[in-house]
Amino acid sequence: MARAFIFPGQGSQAVGMGGELAEAFPAARQVFEEIDDALEQRLFRLMQDGPESDLVLTENAQPALMAVSMAVMRVLEAEGNVDLKKSAKFVAGHSLGEYSALAAAGAIGLADTARLLKRRGKAMQRAVPVGEGAMAALLGLSLEEASAVAEEAAQGEVCAAANDNATGQVVVSGSSAAIDRAVEIAKEKGAKKSMRLNVSAPFHCALMQPAADEMRDALEGVTIKAPVVPVVANVTAGAVSDPERIRELLVMQVTAMVRWRESVLYMKDQGVGSLHEIGSGKVLATMTRRIDREIEASAVNTPEDIEKLLASL
Image (cartoon, rainbow, N blue to C red; front, side, top):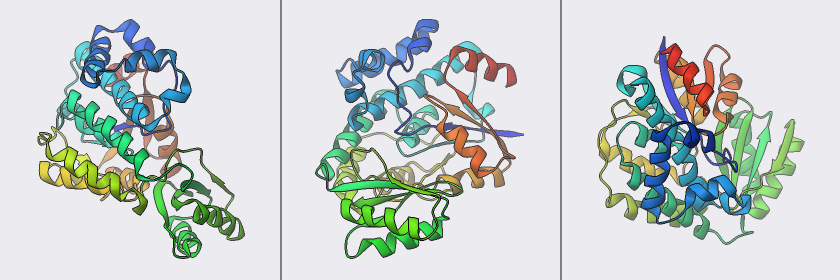
């Protein structure tokens, strides 16, 4: 049975994350130190001590989540001699998690990944003034139904499906007033629940185009190698290994929908029977069970989780 390693996105951050890893494993401590040096910031201290209000800022949350994911990967390599090429058929990540996946697969260096995510977070926050954009979760509607709600709610403004996370779990993104309309229309259309999300910007929609333009510039200056295993890209829900195509898709990803449900089903169709969520939290493992209960899913973020995974490889 083939495996894939998957990497969480924004929302999985929590004060204290990575602390157990750093205490238990020198390889994890080294990752956190390398990222602090690359960013010229005491990010690990912020991850441990907060305040949470600073950690959740997009420019901090994105590199911090990647840091925990890469700390787990380095520990797996150091403690269990894990060779990703032998252990996984694919890697994939949700939004910023795609950068973690690429770093894990050796396509982008650790320092470059940290700097790219710091810049990505800042660019996304700058793209839309606070209060002018929003996101909402529409629960109980299919992607087609949620897209129809977004189209009806737009009324000349931006409103689009941003995350197809799991069956009946779609997030829409766009102009603040349009998102408010989408919440009400979704209720009328039979959504089990529709609610605005507590996010700082309208991610993965056309309003993010200024951030996409900035990331195009940022990515041009970074070396991207072929990953040791293919990456299942958010934009296409298919495998990619060509460095220039990866670069192109990372730019597109800023404004495009995250096709996570389709990505998981693609991996299943390719023979993957188990997914291991590498990094903070267990959001993707929980989503996997909603997408297809035949796929085994586990979260790997503590020393105990690592020991369990190594015993199964």
